[in-house]
Image (cartoon, each protein chain N blue to C red):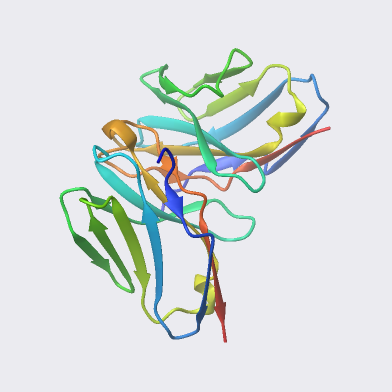
Length: 115
Length: 111
């Protein structure tokens, strides 16, 4: 069964550094998402992306965050200048049509640790 | 309330049925979802139900939806040790794209 893949599985970064988290969505999917889960807290929506632009973003997704689909397969989340509070598990998801018509399939996540 | 609510813990004996309950917030949520998260792993889609349905059955899983009370439940029949995980309920508020998750119910299956 096709799956969403994320790399790396664990990223350790110094505070203030830029970090790029990578995702390869399922190949025929058109909608892409990033979520995060701070340890012990809920999974929170960050951003959705369709047709090379952001469809929706949450309050968490401020100017320090950006997303990009640099080629036909990858979908990336960049954090420009990381803060301690960015430490979390980041999940990428994709869906075939939209989140309401087709379910979102998640990757295994990237654990981001900010030192 | 503002949040999707779930009880935090459930302990069940192997072979018994598990019932995980969820109260969601937005009556315009078109679909409601159940995801499973095993330790160190991602979110695995278990099942989902369209908001105009009352029930959906898929092998050992039964989803019940009470739209009037905004209550969703997941029943796992013949619970096995491999069912030990965190189970998240999620809605699509406003019928939009994003998923809004509950805090998750940790299910522990004991022998």
